[in-house]
Amino acid sequence: MARKKKDEQQDISPETANVIIGETAPNGIASGDGNCAVGAPTPNKNLSIQRIGYKDGYVTIEAEENVPETDYVKNISLRSAEAPDPEFVAAFEALADGARQLIAVPANWAKDAIHVTKVSLGGKGVDKGATITCKASLDTSDTPFNFSTPFLPFSVEGDTNRPIMPPEICALIRKTEALSLDYLQGKRSQGSLPL
Image 1 (tube, one colour):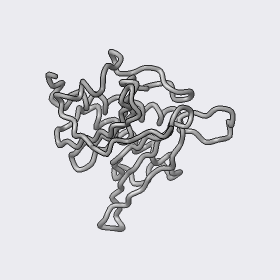
Image 2 (cartoon, one colour):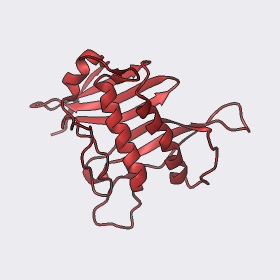
Image 3 (cartoon, rainbow, N blue to C red):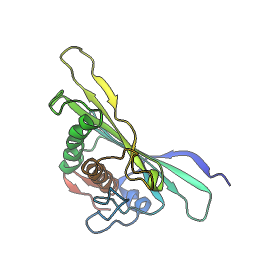
Image 4 (tube, one colour):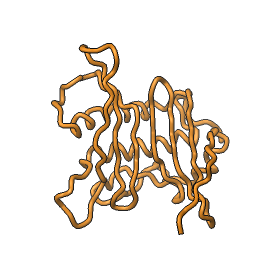
């Protein structure tokens, strides 16, 4: 039977985020899939982060939550101008080097000019993976060069010749995912909000 999607989108306030997300491990980290075992968050098992964005001072997080004992999937959307924890910002900045590696350009290409704007997560099980979206300010144009890395799974079964996300980049993506869950639960640059 096909799953139904609720057509509603919901903005999450810090007051309701802990109800939607549920529990995480004490450090927000647990083991993950295959080759990407480091840094996997342990969210509410019914919640799946789809996109994490940080651009122009706004944090955007999109997720899907399977509603228990129903065939519905709830779409969750958050867009906030509240400054994230510095660790969240650092994780996004660290992904720029990984993006260069994934599109096979020199490590010093557009150094300090690439900004990661979004991480998109997709797939299920062994096909779960990610795409990193960036913008680069180039000397040759007054508009940014926008690009996305190819979608790469975090692990594979059987076909060992299939490209996968390099483990060090995967760990950064998983850390970003864990920090986005923290953000949904109220962790901001000034510290945790009382929930």
